[in-house]
Amino acid sequence: MEIYTYPSNAATGRLKAIAGRGVAFDEALFENVKTILKDVASRGDAALVDYANRFDAPDLTAADLEVTPAEFSAAESVVEGSFMAAMERAAEQIEGFHRKQLRKSWITTDRPGTLLGQIFNPVETAGVYVPGGTGGDTPLVSTVLMNAIPARIAGVNRIIMVTPSRRDGTVNPYMLAAARRVGVDAVFRVGSAWAIGALAYGTERIPRCDVIVGPGNIYVTIAKKIVSGTVGIDMIAGPSEVLVIADDSANPEFTAADLLSQAEHDTLASAVLVTTSRPLAEAVVAAVTRQTAHLTRKDIARKSLENYGAVFVVSDIPAAFELANRIAPEHLELHIEAPFEHLGRIRNAGAVFVGQFTPEPIGDYIAGPNHVLPTAGTARFSSALSVDNFIKKTSLISYSETAFLEDAPDVIRLAETEGLGAHAHSVRIRLGQ
Image 1 (spheres, rainbow, N blue to C red):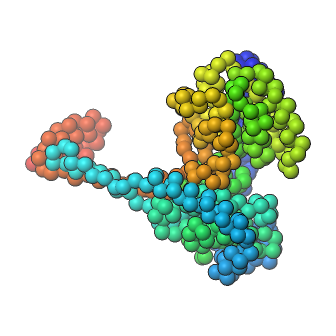
Image 2: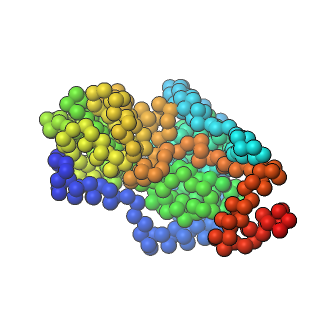
Image 3: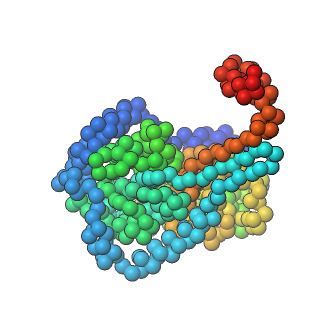
């Protein structure tokens, strides 16, 4: 990792490289995904089977698309008790956090003769996409929990999960155990862009969904972008990222480990340290080099740090937060003295991890807040996945005749200003004009 003094021309150049690493929609790839989606929309399950046979399980048939009750039962008999206990703790804490996000319908009669309010209703059907994870050998259990739990708490009637099968057509038992625990109603063994098409348009076996959530590769991301508007989606997610603000009180070994926890995701991940201390910066760089050598995914981490890692040395803590707000990171860690005194400085961040014993992986798995977070600077205008992603808000309006008569002249004036005569007439006819 290189150390930069901020501000400087070199630091600005590095920031541009980091910011520019987001999701790139190659035109040819975009057209390819559009073709896949059209194929699924027209041929349904037959298209899904064709794609699954080509890319996942060569012997899969249409009858095999849905995971059976027997497979769910078998999965729970295979997974270890220690896993079930860990998953249960994570699920309970995620549920506890998301229950606090529920909102009730409300009505106000503050203005005489009027009744105004909002009605909150869940969507009917939600689709959850879960990547296969290294051919199904590294099941993304946390993705199941983080995406399905808020949907269930929102009151969604039916949750459909899609995930690519392993080569032999099976789904990892840990994934199935997680799906059963959080109330997923059906799991289908399809992946990539064709799975998104199935959720968006429906097929003979897979119901059409109202909202689609969950991460995926570039094909999944582009497919979600294309179907957005036909269905609701959570977000267009880019590569993972962490930014750590640290002063000379920070433990360089902890800080290095947290940077690497993001760098190992993929070669497009970004790990950034912003510090007021050059000696700490140098110690963290040395620790990163030392710790990387022992990682299973060290080649990925090294490439990530080489391309999109950086250490920025700033003049003081306010300057550190200004830089963090400029980057708007997915994960923001605070390794500084009296961190709670500085929370008011944060404007743009997906999630904030306060203190040296709150590493980002705590949030990934078990703390409770959702780990589906805005990336690539989109924390400037978007938020973590929540119960709200599965809720519709309907306005409620009722006027008495007296209240109508009071507001009518202003409605007529505004409608005529906009050249909408029929709008004005709708009001005038009630005035006998």
